[in-house]
Length: 420
Image 1 (cartoon, rainbow, N blue to C red):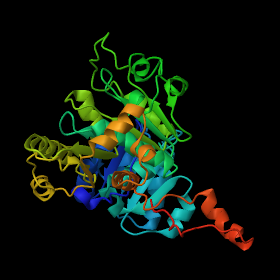
Image 2 (cartoon, rainbow, N blue to C red):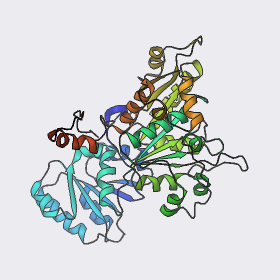
Image 3 (cartoon, one colour):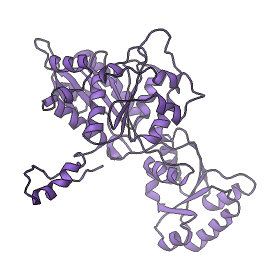
Image 4 (cartoon, rainbow, N blue to C red):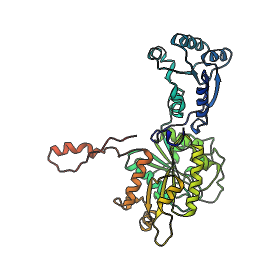
C-alpha cells in the first residue's frame, strides 16, 4: 500500500503498548500482518506472527501467558472454528481479546461469540487502520481522540511558525475545534509573542521533568488564548541548553493527544532525532517553503524521507509562503510543484505590511484584516488539515429561521454539513 492508498481523511491513531500474536494458516495473511506491523502507528506494539492457525494458538498457550490480542487466521468451517475458540478460551488470561480473520463473514458466529471474539473480513488485515481503530478499541484504555499536526519550514525564515499559529487560530475560531499550539523551538519560539502572551511557565517545565508530567501538570502549563485555543509556550531564553533525546516529547504528545481534538506542533527548522520523530509520527504534516532553490532542495529531501517512513500515510501539505517578492527571481509554483511531485495546498503571497502589523501587535491575520485573501487562504488550509469542508453552524445560523418568522431582518446562508 503506497501513498494515498489510505484515504487522507482517515484519522488513524497509534496503537498503545500492547502485545499482539497472530496465528495464520495462509502465507499471504502472515506477510500482510508482518508488513502492517512496520507501520509507524504500530511502533509501540509488540507483534509476532506464527503459522498453524487456531490449533497452533491452542497449543502455544497451554503453558504460557496470553498476550493482549490474539489474531487467528483460518479457513475452518463454523463447527471446527467454534471448537478451536472454546479450547483457546480455557487458556486465555483475563483481558485477552481474540480477533478472528475468516474467509467469509459469518453472522451467526458473530452473534454467538460477539462478546468475546471479533469477526472481520480477512482483507481488513491489509491496512494499519484495522489495528488502530479496532484492536486499540478493544484493548484496555480509551482510544486517543486527538489529531497531531506538525508544521515546519523547509528552510529557516520561511514563516512556518507564523503560518502554524494562524492555522491554529482558524481551526479554533472558525471550525470551533479545541486546539493547542506546542512551541517546540525552546530557544527562539514566538508563540508567546504572536498571541500576545507572556506565560511564566510552558513547554520547558514539561520536557525537563519527565517523571512529573501528567495531565494536571500540562493543564497548569497551558496559556489560554481564547475559548478554544491554548498554547504551550517556549521559554525563548538562552540560559540553558536545549538538547533532547529522541523520545523527549513522547509523553507530552501522548497526554495532549488523549485530551485535545487538535494539537499543532510548531517544529523549528532543525534536524535532530526528536524533530524527525515528531514529524514522522504526526497525523498531518505541513511543510512551509518559499520559491527558491534551497527551499526546493530541502522540500524534496524532506518529502523523500517522509514518503519512505510513512508509506501508509497521505502526502504532507505543501504551503508556499512569500510568493511574489518584487524583483526577486523565483522558481515558478508550477515548476516547484513538478520538481517535488506535490501540488501545494495553499499559496500565500508576499504581504510584509499585513504580516508585520500582525506580528508587532500580537495578533493573527484574521484579526488584522479578516477579509483579506491571505486570511481566506489560511481558513482554507485549516479546513484541509482538519478535513472539514465547512465550519459548523453557529447559534446565529440556527436561530435565523425563527427570527425571520417574527419579522426581524437577518441574513442567513445554508451551511452544508461538515465532512470529516
